[in-house]
Amino acid sequence: MRLHNILSEPPSLEFKEINGFSSNRKIKIGKREKITGRIVMRFSCKECEGVVSFFSMGDLYYTYLSENLISLDCILLCDDHPGSFVPIWFLVQSEKNDIRGTKPSVRILKSSRKLLDNVALNNDERYGVFTELLEKAEHSYRDDLGAGSMVYLRIVLEQTTQQAAIAVNIGTHKSNGKPRAFSELIKEVDAQCKILPQEFSADGYRLFEELSEAIHGGCSESVGLRKYEHCRRLVLGVIDNIRTKREMKIARDALWSSGGAV
Ligand SMILES: [Zn+2]
Image (tube, rainbow, N blue to C red; front, top):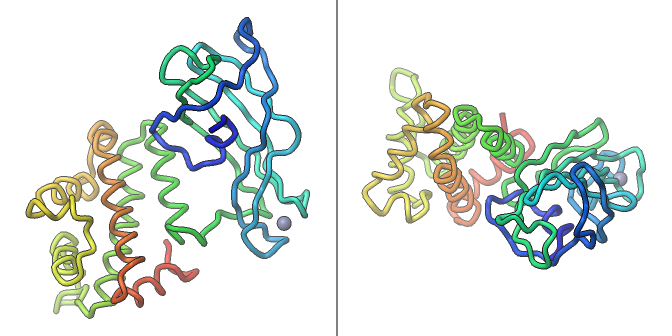
């Protein structure tokens, strides 16, 4: 694996070993060096009227920041439409102080990009209309905004659960017209069609309740940051279960159609 492969993937907190990319052992802070390879990401190009690959334009250069940090920015471009492009920036961290070494383990510590008029997120893949909300949750987390990250996860968890309830004819409102308590609703849906990932419901909902409290309870920044990874796993697990269960077809259709997200 090489640096441009890591930069082409969704950001992950896991460090991955790559082939060394620097040939200059004496590079100074703030200096730039060329690397080989192209970054590729999928976006929806409005000119193409569909999801296509966007490639980094020209040569890639990183800026050396320290023994475990580099910065890199570039423009990703639709091959057929030069007017469809995405400016993007990465901060890459190595696990040890060996970012210029022969086999550094690295991850994207932070990234930022701007989707301009001609480009939209690729909603066709695994998380459909929730791609954007999950991405906002991740960005909030990486910016140390724990409470904000929980807000985005909450919207996703509530919407998916409500659609799942509708799919299996479980009422989402009480007789007085008010919405049912979320924790009660999700347990009933789960009892009927197992939408919670095994690890969250196996212990009698203890873990689910703890995370649900963080997601719903207006938690502090520090609690949100501490529980974010677990909560994200919970939310992604629910989405995956809805995607793959036959009885969830109605929920899938509602959530993966264009009008599903907030
Ligand atoms: Zn295009």
